[in-house]
Image (cartoon, rainbow, N blue to C red; front, side, top):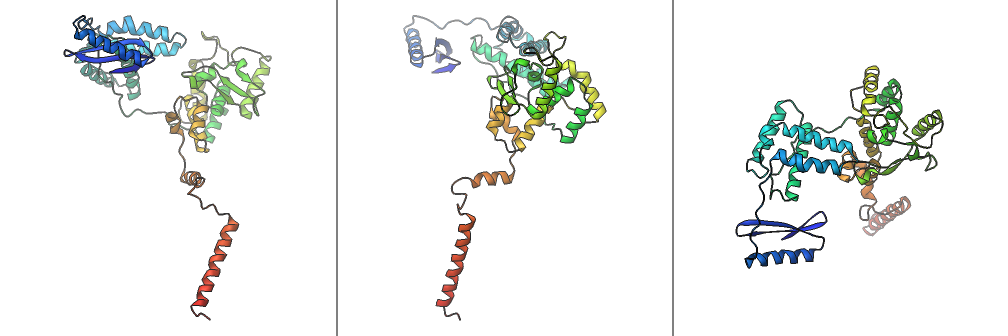
Length: 375
């Protein structure tokens, strides 16, 4: 059989009790089938034998020589993604029983279960363990794709992971912003009114602000985790006034970061606002939350306002509406209103037509009584 991985077709079949799997390096399915048939024919004629596979590398060997170089090259422009894979591999390598194990060892699934128990015994939350398992799963899938092993055990994520469900009330938001100092107050306001990811806000540049778009201007998000993250967001009057004041204070720059800082990146980072955020929580006496919760708050309010899931996904920069659906919880009235717009769910009668219908029914009833001998 042939199947597609990315843009290239592979073929796979059993021969003499052994699995034969090869990449055709072709994007045409017809050519791929011809190559599979040619390989089968050559094996049948005895012109070639089953190719001996090299000894499978151990987990640590594959991680160091194959996986990490791939991650560093692939995510050279996304340092935090590269660090995510690097740190995940470091933690996995710390478990000696997994590190020295060949990737094709039958006990690999058992060792992964042992690793999970080992990490949970150290008090790690489910979310933290799942992030490490995601790194492991990506590594094993690449080992199969690159032909180092034929198959690997399925890595399942742990259940019970807690998602960010914190939503600030209007009162809590007002107290928090009043207790915040600059630049935290400005950043938090932008997050609350646009739903940007904190990292997107930190990287905001003056050349990405369009003052004449829409009613109050717009903000351009030029890059992010996925292609969907690149989007244009309208400014609210509050955000417009805040940024315009900051722009004038900085002598109306045409380029550069909106929130510059003496950091390696040149703009503020999460660590830049850590102390200000802790102080604002203490002064305002608002429940503890992370700045990302402001994005969750904005999207939850947007979903409650009646925004459909496709529009919400575009505003949020989500690559899948399944993620956006978490924020949309239509009420019973909203469902009935939506169904009433469909043919077959609405009588189609105007108020005047309905009154005429009732009058006609009353007249018919009177005529029937007369025919039955009523006085």
